[in-house]
Length: 446
Image (cartoon, rainbow, N blue to C red; front, side, top):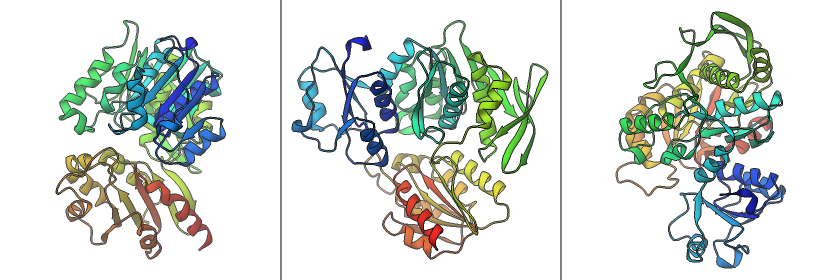
């Protein structure tokens, strides 16, 4: 496809985090961008403010004029099969493209730095995109979250290099054309797609096989696929050593090829983020930067919304995070314990997907049992229908905590207000984020 011949682009499901960064990308390059989404959110409001027309009604009357010759239609698989607009466009002869297919076409014409892994993708991609942007590298980064430095999920800076979050869900990353790959993790996830962990591992190997002969592979030490390795305070090709905390930030030294590069400064809590910073460092070297340039980029990085976001920290603290897998929950709780030692933590968790709750129930129970008190919300279904027997009540029965109870989106805020805690931690990838602002406002005024 030649994007020069495309003038209009219509996104069905434009409010998704991945769809919206593509919409912003094409808008920047002068395309007539519009779209549909089911509900108005803060993100869709921002797109509207940027000049992108969005309709929230699935009707043929709200479809813009589109021609087969100069228009592109992009859709998300989360759109239901009976969607009127989607089916009408198919009837008219339009070929509908998944977001991953369009991103794949973009990466064919750029030097592609692809960040993959079941956890750590968004933090690593955002940090890498920021490092390149700070050092005026001609690059654009497509992010799976909102980067605090830019209040956006797109970092624009040119089209020589593309930094992409290579998503394993639905095997989307197999549509990319990577020149350098980093793999941050390969834990079992998306078993509704893969069935077994081994199938997920095979998919990662297929992705690595897409590298050209001179391609670069960087992996966290210990993964079943090994390239150049990185690790914190372990022997690896890229090592973080002498890790310490000063004035609320991590300081560490990087060891590479028997050279020590001292005093990297990272303003992101959680030791797992040192790993992510190492991954970004290794990838930035492939883009031609030196260690001093990378160090300055890491120091000015402010983080990603809903990734260990501290919204309040006075007489009590409030932390919000997107974690939705047991490994991610372990990392966020470890980070909170490290930052707020010996404090009572009230956790509020909204499980994401019935299938994920079923597949990892025992692991979720073990992770959540590390809290001092828990409010467990209803399962957020996203794209799924309920599975018989898989409920929050069932999951709660597995959790080894004295102080635990169920909650729904409608009553969880009131339950929080009745609790005593030192640290409040809200966790989940569904619509639990709608509680963040009310909780923050309450803490600031109480």
